[in-house]
Amino acid sequence: MIITIRNAANSEARAQLMALLCRITGSQGPITTTHMNGREVVAIDSALINTEAHSLLKSQPAVEQTHSLKTPYQLASRAFQSENTSITIGSTNTCTPVTIGGINADPVIMAGPCAVENREQLITTAQAVKRAGAQVLRGGAFKPRTSPYQFQGLGIEGLHLLAEARNLTGLPVITEVMEPGMVEIVAQHADVLQIGTRNVQNFPLLLATGRNSKKLPVLLKRGLSSTLDEWLLAAEYIIAAGNPNVILCERGIRSYDPQTRNVLDLTCVPLLQQLTHLPIVVDPSHSTGRRELVPIMSRASIAAQAQGLIIEVHPDPDTALCDGKQSITPEQLEKIIHETTMIAHMIR
Ligand code: PEP
Ligand code: MN
Image 1 (spheres, rainbow, N blue to C red):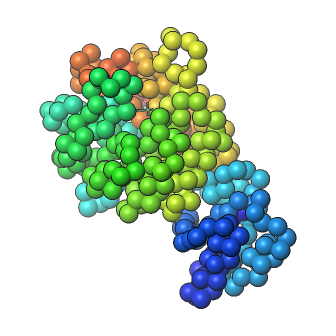
Image 2: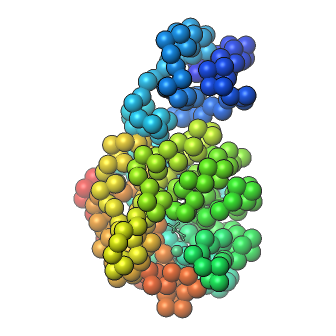
Image 3: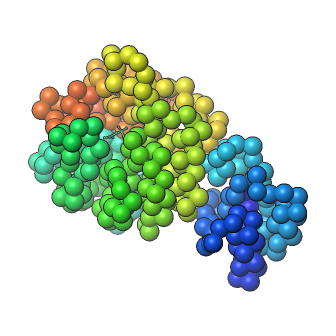
């Protein structure tokens, strides 16, 4: 159940409501509320609300409205918020901000190397993806690698290089954070926090990104085998922790055929648009694992009404330290942006 709190509620009325919510949920408090589209809301498990609790809640002077939803996720649900969530990426102090979601917004293209390898590689790529028309620079500083012997990323040095690339190009930056204790440090340098597929149910990490002090947007990748409900519940953790700025990213799911790295589930894009108001982007790089499939799956993703793409680009893909097989060149990116923009305008 979602409870909308009255804007004008005084502190006494609020305190009374919070005490009641603690009593109903068995929480020690404090209760976290979230500001969504001008409303202050809090969600609790409907199973805890019996008739008595419901009438007590309804009689609270701080309560404006209660909403009962049938889905396990609440604040992420389209049934609660019918308008698309619109999220601004980047701040005018440091870069050129871009908006994702909302009505008729153009698809947002995030592009850059899988991993930040060195200064020259990153700056060259950042300038090239900007020239190609990308609006956000991606690059991993902390890399979740399957083998401990593979390149693990430059760490903090990578964050500094990303911030330098932003200063030089004006592109906002997205990068992955893998540990709750690193969220604030990554947030000092990045404009979007990425949660990788392997961490989609790392609940302490979800909560930490939800509580990040700058309320930076979080790009939440789909888990290797997430159902849509599990994925939306992961998003719900972030929103319920106070941060409504969640972008979902379909990056392919694990299946049995090694021809592709994963299986790109494009049906999830229109399905998610029924289920949630959150923006949805597609990663055609990790979902296919094959660079020759990236252009056509990018076009297909935009035709399926994805609100953006996140694509791995490298100046010399064959020498990339990470994910070269699925990385494309800046020239190929430019063509993809041209084609997907035409598709987006055609289907609008
Ligand atoms: C990445 O974007 O570089 C990455 C590691 O993605 P995923 O978590 O989808 O594998
Ligand atoms: Mn990668």
